[in-house]
Amino acid sequence: MPLPDPFSTNARFQRGDFTGLRTAGICFTANAFPLPDSAGQVRPVHGDFLAVLDDWRACDDDGERIDSAGAPGVKPADTQAFEFADPLGRRTYGADGAWVDLEDVTIAAGERLRFFWKFISPLQGRYNDFALFLAYPDGDVTAPRQPVRTPLAQMSDPARNTLFDTDWCVSVWEPPGGFTGTLRWLVSNGERRGANDRPPGPTARRRFSTPSTLLLDAIEIE
Image (cartoon, rainbow, N blue to C red; front, side, top):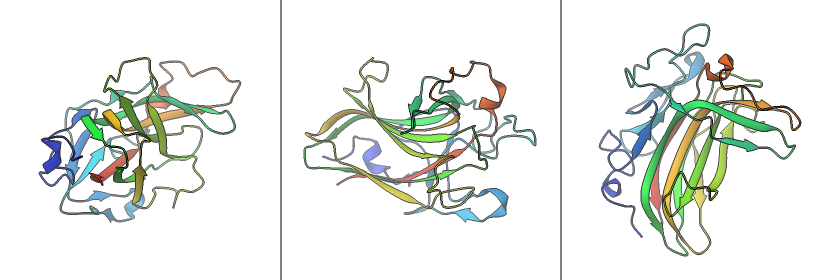
């Protein structure tokens, strides 16, 4: 099945915008995006544009959020409803960030979704920023039915290429029996707590500091 219109003609973001997607928080497209510590520029996997979700540069020297040059005046989205656990039972809780939704997607049985992503974070430690891929059956992102939830990356991941970022990665998802619904790519500030620790309070300031970034490119069904 093709990707839904009008995103079917913008799956590599070559319109330079988010045509066909619903965005929340700081989202913009760019020809290139800088890495922390003057470590160079990230270029698109294909074509002239990539998608940027949240902006690690949009904070002051104390880590407090400031305006993003890529999306002036746009505030981060509330991501406190998002959390996940690691194999040791430690749970990471979201704070704020950004996401994009692709609605009305149909993936037939035997087909698979493929997309490229890159996670950038200038921090390490308990403030475990993360990126998720989620798939909501039937498209209801508010329903109690749990979505497919795949952590793409997190600051504490020992497989990260460097302190600051992963390489461009490619993910493939082949849903058994096919899928109809909404796809979401999300990046969030986060805090990890021990298995027996209480969740962080909703106003714990450091959870909302020093954002990370998720780059996306080349979303396709094959």
